[in-house]
Image (tube, rainbow, N blue to C red; front, side, top):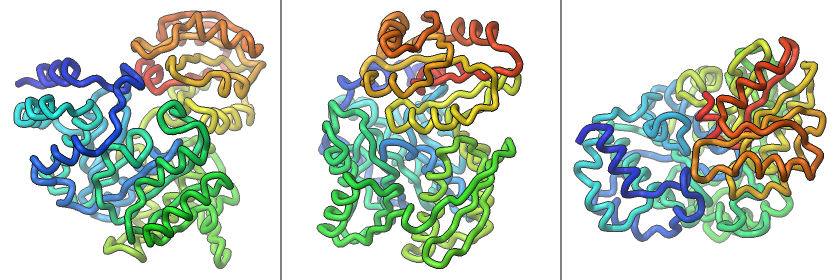
Length: 429
């Protein structure tokens, strides 16, 4: 089949969370385990690093993949969702899976996957594992899709498990409290395998401590190992000074990710590199770590994280879409540097907006819109809900029109922010 025929087959036979939301979610490892076995268990052909978390797992995955590539390893990277092209999800040394490889995989395994009842994410996961094996990957960085315990990626036996942080998101699937969600994420912890937790939280830390003890897994908290004592933005780079808590040693690391929240992700990445150096067979030099962090976006194609789309007026897109992520975004927005703020905003219909809307800046002018997706919350409905929280503006259902209106209103000294949904950002970008 051609690549377009492959996409038609994929979208016609598998329902994605990206378009259908919760109805597309299929927890459990039976189907993916059977499919991997039928393919010869390709996920066993290389080392892997498994990453879960509410926020930051994509950024951490991309930075780590860039570091590993800089260290000379042939590196696989599996993330979701994609913003523009399905092939973004599966990369080898930064290059997207070729169109002909997608078509060939579905030619070979498509019928069997439909017969086995795989979900869209399970199918994509199987494709990624197969691609990494076929391409001779030495180490793969694999991001969970949703949760951890029942996520299709959890068939891996990694050399390091990472959980970035825990916040309230997908509570209808993962549970109503931080502790419930932490328990699902902790499901990626494997017996005897080191586990790194990015941020210490009083509700989630006991869950991880108990699970790690049960598995006999060494547990490290990144924010108890390193701290970021300061950062300076000099686009296109952010310079972060990290202090090792044990002995006070400091080092400044440049990253090409400009979001203020990336300081926390860098602490996680720096700690992960230390664990990989000392507790696994990987050899990662200091130069590889520095080069990998400095060039993460350029190396891996990461987008949608405090991405500057224009300088005049300053136009930034960020996909933070839950209370934890929105809090970090608003913190950076509040740092100012502009005269007036215009927010081009759209959300998925399943978001708990009563937890999100009160966090948004009341002084901004809003352009309420929606992505061209069945999951998108209608712009008029978003505007009505936002009005109850004192957020005012106008409604433009088409994303491109909303951005055009913001640009027409903004002066060169103003700022335009685009967010609420990765799908909205992907459409605009």
